[in-house]
Amino acid sequence: MTQRATLPDLDTLTPQALKALIVTQHEELLSKDDQLLRKNEQLASRDEEIERLKLLIAKLRRMQFGRKSEKLDWQIEQLELKLDELEASRAEQATASPTPLAASAVNRDRRAVRRSLPAHLPRETRKFMPKQTACPDCGGELKHLGEDVSEILERVPASFKVIRQVRTKLACGRCDKIVQAEAPSRPIERGIAGPGLLAHVLSSKYADHLPLYRQAEIYAREGVELDRSTMAEWVGGCSRLLEPLLEALRRHVMSAGKLHADDTPVPVLAPGNGKTKTGRLWTYVRDDRPWGDQSPPAVWYAYTPDRKGEHPQSHLKEFTGTLQADAYAGYGAVYEGKRVKHAACMAHVRRPFYELHEAHQSAVAKEALERIAALYAIEEEIRGRSAGERRKIRTERSKPLLESMKKWFEETLGKLSRKSDTTKAIRYALQRWDALTLFCEDGRLEIDNNAAERSLRAVVLGRKNYLFAGSDAGGERAAAIYGLIGTAKLNSLNPEAYLHEVLSRIVDHPVNRIEKLLPWNLAAELAENSRREI
Image 1 (spheres, rainbow, N blue to C red):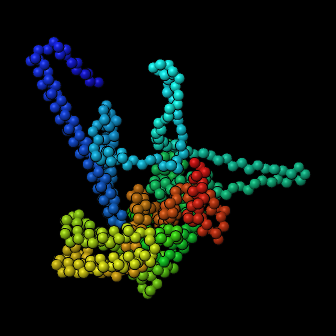
Image 2: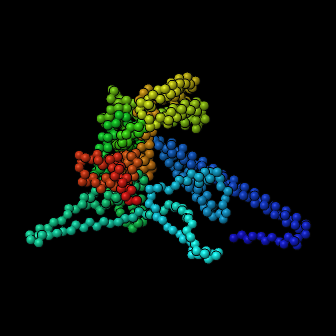
Image 3: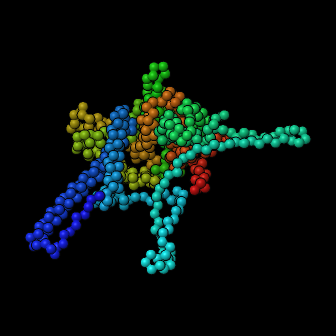
């Protein structure tokens, strides 16, 4: 701890000594001001670096989904680590400092927008009374004046418990007849796992991206030894148990008049040689909330061992309506005839222009981005309105912008090299122009296919953690559970709570009423259960 310098007796100092003291004190103050200024500059620079890293990470995450290379995963991991270190360093320094440091604008803004703690969480009140029982100045009686209330967020660790199922036997005193209650049904026959534990294992693996071996390590720290192979059997058993519910989900999705579709690669362990092959996970999203429709949103996934066009043809054989998808040639046979229309994705048009602008500050790319941004501004404005109103506004405002964009594309194309990346980007749009502008003719459609791309984010994160699926059967299981978890999220449900409820009921539930277990049909009951627990 630093010692404060004592001030000499000024009455005893000569005028010359007093002047020297003042000069010395002034120089020390200037030196401290310089040190404080440098410190504040360092803090401001660190805060700016933190914000820059956050923006860069957000940009890389936008680029991450759907690409072929895993390089971005590594870049994001490194940036996340650097960001963690900077923020931890800032917090450590702020805690250790004996006096408050000059806060930067970034810190002030962050404190100003801190959210209040969620109202639905249970509250535990702890009162802290003054040590004094009487006034410390006059000894008078102390009366209640008021109180200051602050809140902290605490976590109660999850815990295991064993449920003992005791079935009492009763015997008749006359004829020795014995009666006993039937054994309660279990999600996994003769299994030791209850529906809550099974739901936690499934949601941890497919929603939180924790492989089973990591879960086993976590449970071991809590004193519960669960073998990874046992948990794998649970996952397989739950997948079989949920098959009727998945079929009901598929029927609901395919009965829509408009679907979003996409696919992503999934590395799968090839049997025999220890190497991986590339399977495919397909997503089909039904979500008509943007035009005010009340039909429950849902997503259905399907796994295939390859990317042959026969797979989407099989998936969509019962579907009639408009398919919003990318330009994958495998959809071609689906569009033959008039059963299914193709609506293209403006986000796929925008992406190469964005990359060109980031790489070269291209003027053509910049103008293309500005024109596309004007279309998205209209979409933001009309989100949630009726299909008829959306179509009317698009006809009046979006269609002229699209016609102008097409004309500009065609004029610009004549000024560019045939082999340039900008030419490729423009031709991609012009070759799909009818499908790209179909959203102006139907208010139910979206300007892009982002609903499908969002549904694949969980798959991409899981792929990063799992590295590969164990087999084609493992890919099919993943597709099944991803569908239920994704649909629960679309309906604003906690996936683990939803799976817990389903696994508690499905064994004894009539198969001809399986639709009653779909997420939106359990939403009200789950909400009531949550309030009751609080």
